[in-house]
Image 1 (cartoon, rainbow, N blue to C red):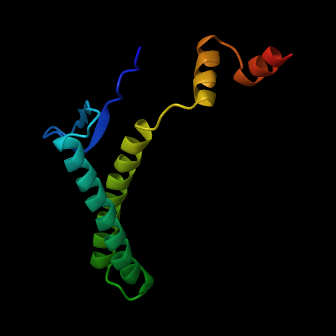
Image 2: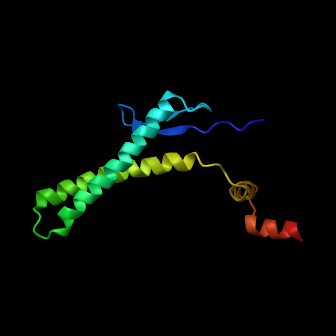
Image 3: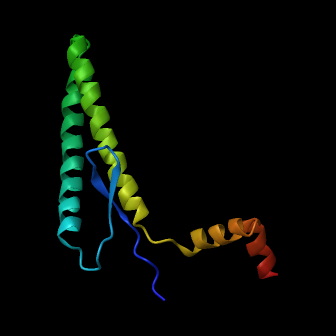
Length: 120
């Protein structure tokens, strides 16, 4: 039996600020492509903001308002980047090692000791 397709965390929130998820199809539909494009834009914008913020932060004479503005924009970009990382991480396939760890922990055992004991 096929394992269920994991939900995809989308790079935007609902109007209430809640995360949005998509059940992707195997062909990568319109919303998946839209989300891919938005993630790419968010990461590119983050790189641009970082480059500009470095100029402000490297100048000891930068006014407080500029430093604060740079910090706020950097925080927004970091939030976007972390969301992209979480979304992509959730879509990674589970490896055999992780599956063994999950199985052993659900049985209340130690995956390292259980593996060593099985090999004897």
